[in-house]
Length: 64
Image 1: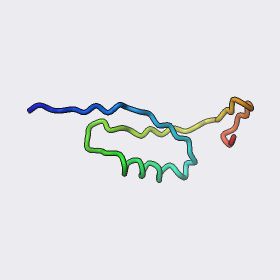
Image 2: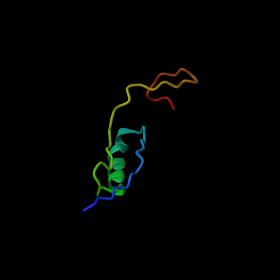
Image 3: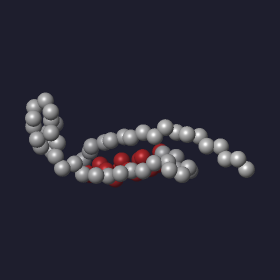
Image 4: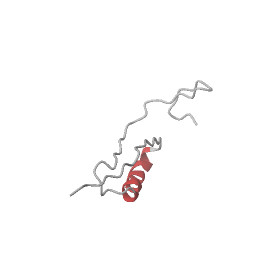
């Protein structure tokens, strides 16, 4: 039996959000992404230590 493979170009989506909104976002992503195929993606979670606004030089996590 010959297996037919359809290649889907990988992509990376980076999102910075309030930690309280993390679980709902993960639940939503998992609910809409097809999971029938091997290696259909991963969700990597990491913290943001600091934020530097280049234009103003502001160095705070709360910088708008």
